[in-house]
Image (cartoon, protein in one colour):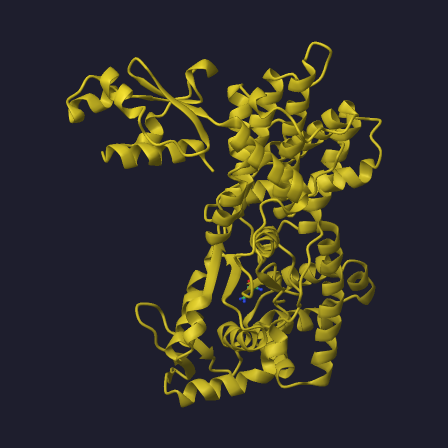
Length: 560
Ligand code: ARG
């Protein structure tokens, strides 16, 4: 519950004037003037009464049980929250539900399919795929927390012309040992070399090899199998490192066998036509969807259509999300529209969750020009940098390596997730790793700090505290913020925006640090009851920070 909002609603109901009550509400400088104060000057004109009189009249508002008192003070109307009733309710709920606090069952009996990460085999795992991984992984956790059955699909790009290119490159310049050593980087080298040497003849050869592959040629298939197995093994190492999981790795290649059936079905519905030798579906307001090219090669869209039909059959989802870079928006519009045109009612439940580009200072990334930034390098660099910081800050820390991993990955994920996904994002190492900035390490550090306070407190935090002792503005704000957690998670889910949650826990961490700066929790000069109450607040805030981080796919180490 957001007190400000609730009080605004009360006032609105009473006054029936169209005002922005929420921004008019003030937090008085002193708790003796209430938790919130409403200045009545602005109403004078409309109500044709003196502000003092208005404030006085408003004291008759019927009090809900979370308000203890409504008093007038000159032209101000002061609201006193009912601590016993309200603070207790929030803090007890957190204490009781612990890691489950914020969860719900609104998704019960509903299934959401999320297609995320989905890198292209034989092409490097780029930063765009990292974004998809971080966002999709968080949406997976958030929706599961809300009671949905979630199916995470890594729709591997394990088919396509790139294999034709790589087969020819490998046959010309390939080295098996190098391939085994670092398959992803080596295949990428071959890919770059192919494009450096690009000629019409080479392109034609590549196309011919891909055709062979599509027609089940044994040699082509063997090389394909080798490339994909090695690459997938390498990807899986990173998924393990990042603690990202999938329920299925069914990729594009798995749908080759369905393509003819899908094309026949669409033809039968009478929605296809031939255009310059290609098979297309014309669509309203957007470019037609290409189902089959002149050279008979099947297409990305056709496979996505087959995959969507298969997923509906297998999982009967209520919603299917595709967490993919914004540059593919047209592709999704097109194949969603084809399904719609073909009469699949559930096509309305398909949703593209786009995100902008992540730019490193060098500029955007392209797989073609050899200026790619590898996931491997990003993650390793993050871990190494954090490792250095930890060695300076906390040389005695146990499990240094593990913590550096958690914080390094947390830094990269949080940077991504704390920005509105729709916008392009700049990746600047200094900012991403700043322990004092708006970063993952900052939130993690705040959690570790709270945990250390609780360790120092030694005695178990009492759960029956005197709730009327929460009098400081920061304490009250902190409690009311904790209470917003449930709503924030739902909001993040509805918008498919983990950033809503990330911004929230960032603010929560900032507020906690402000609270801790002002409100002493431990020490001989702090009254025992006050200390108990504040420690409970430390504990519950830490719990919410942890739950929030975990929903973003980020660990919360106890020490760092
Ligand atoms: N492999 C694709 C790429 O990297 C992304 C796949 C996204 N999912 C989908 N169903 N199309 O561009």
